Structure formats: structure tokens, C-alpha cells
Length: 106
Image: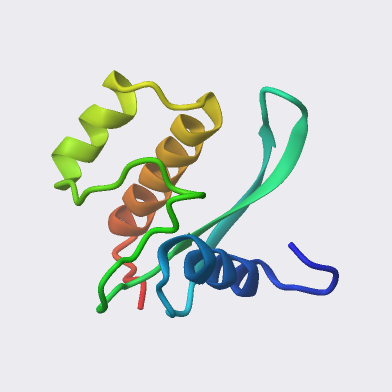
């Protein structure tokens, strides 16, 4: 994040830099991530993509589209940093919380 940059603006910028996609990021939640190197604040966002994804090969080693079930399996069967698993689990918890409360994310 740049000085004075909001979490959603930073997420949208990173999306453009790493995946070549220009789309607004919607903030979901922020938490203190106990990273492998040191703790840091992590903001989770959602983005609806309606354009081709063009990954920057210097940033992205691999990509593909997964169904929700495939993504859940990959997060627990594939080698990911622990931070990614934690973020995914928190994302799922937030989606479940919203569903239980009968709320809809725009």
C-alpha cells in the first residue's frame, strides 16, 4: 500500500499490475495476519471480473479457473503459504456469516 492509499484502491492497483484487470475491489474485512516472517494487516476484498485475465509472468507462476469445490480442495491439498490458507478460511467464514444473516453483498 502506498502512503494514503485505501485498502480497496491498493487491491484494485495490485489486480491491474498482477492480472491485467481493471476492476473495483470491494472491501470485506481487515485482520492482523500472523505471517511467517512477521505480523501485518491484511485486507480481504472481492472483485467481479468481466474481462480476460492476463497475468504478469514475473508476478504469477500459475493460474486457472477453479470451481468453489476445487478451490476448497486446492487450499488444503496444495502447497500454499499459511497466510493464504488463513485468508481463504477467513473469507469463507465471512461469506458464511453474511449468508446466515440473510445479507447480500452488492
